[in-house]
Length: 169
Image (cartoon, rainbow, N blue to C red; front, side):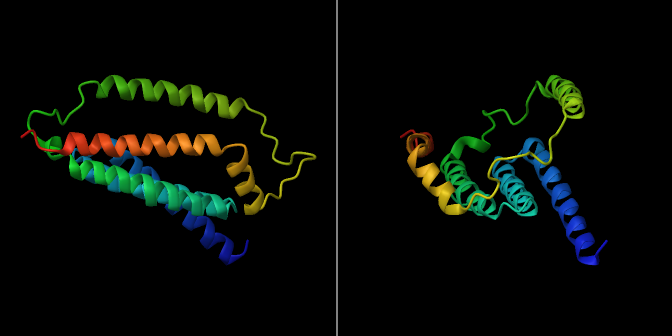
């Protein structure tokens, strides 16, 4: 194998390991702001995975939309909510043992399904070369309504964060 290929493969494995570690941090850290920062690392790791799969357009969209817009909105909502670190708000989850048991059960079924599936790596027929212009026309043509619904949901979330964050006086 080529040395550059080995370096790229090692980089992908390292990025995957960092992404998994950050995903564990998202659900285990007690500070919600730190959880949001770990989520940014997870989303950047997903973008690295897209680049390794030669889907550069999706990687850029991942960074622009999720890291740039949605995560910024989440951090803004966290910073507007003053009572999030209060002693009244519980900082622990009492169902963590049940959650981990169900997660383990899900992983068993998911792994079994993945191992039993006959993955067709070389599909015959079909156009596999889709450029960014075709994707843009597709998203802004047939799927423009879901994009508008998402923007309304984000605005409602922002207004809700402002209402929750304002003082009670």
